[in-house]
Length: 278
Length: 198
Image (tube, rainbow over all chains, first blue to last red; front, side, top):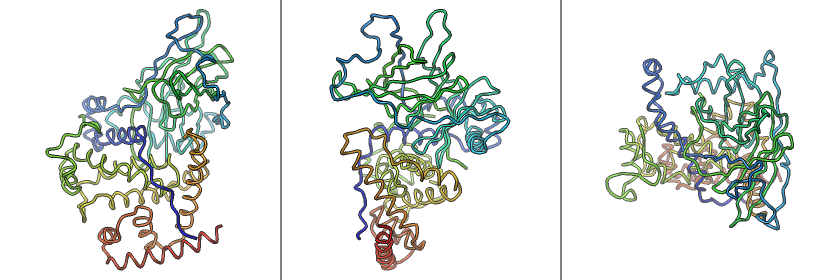
């Protein structure tokens, strides 16, 4: 039997962009030292300029609207005749974790992220590691994301792979996925999109959530699929995959009519700190 | 501090005409654009090599990014023994994979249990082909884990990385004939291991 290896492939532009973004972020991070940690505010100014390119979502509500520019559930006429909605075969399983029984895995991951934050020029912008309380963890394609809250309030997300740890930007502007109608208290905001395509954020006033992802496969031709989100302690995680310009997301909380948004290539990736695991 | 984006590398003279060794020398002196040019030149090769070291495109992206980050951090400590930076980058990638898996044993096991990459939602034939590639690659890697260290080094550089035995010999500080002998033994052992596995 001969040793036959798979052929080499051309590096896809989106992979290249993500790899380069991580390199740029790392190249611009000064090596940690006592002096530089004390010099936080100056280092922060340098770090802010290198937030890497990723994805930017433009939320557009469609509830009760006739505006043709607004995005809702893709109408049948826009959908490829061969495409059918499907439910994700592998919804991300939740891992509930009582605070008093802190799972060692989650603690280890948060420690890894805490170390990366401590070595980051933006360390002063993050709440102290001691205040991070884990909520749940999800795992996909080599990425494990642990959601945490600062003393049970401000959310953050710790994304760990075999070699690196990445923490969501603590000051990232939330991207509105679903806005509540008058008199209702339902709000869903995305805060971080991982390189593995896991979208995470806050979700208040709901217990379940589905996201219809419509991938643009041709002029006005979409391939829709439905993904079930994990919702826990007012946080959510859902695998939306790698998206590109023109793809659409429709968020449906508790079976309600969806609120849609169109995806655009990003100017900002909501990463707060990233680095190799020491 | 900002550095140039991939399409905006500003280096005196044509980038194509500048050797890796010269780019490396400039990068060691702190020239971000020179290191960016090295990245552009070798990103695809390192990414492919990282796949061949892991059998997972998702991991390959992670290992690839980290290889260049490690190279940037060690740039002042390393002098290229041949003109191409690729053999050394391949060694960094291999060390990352080996050390990270060894150090994070539990996580490493979890990663190995991951389903084969399925998120490349292309044409169905392409997906099937990719899954076959992943499965075949992981079989080869499993067999390669049984090789003695010296043979595995030669296997990773010359068979997986497709670099010349002369370059591998220079990097490892041994004679070219030594590398060729290691490769010959590695091929024979791999064939045996793969037949046993099948």
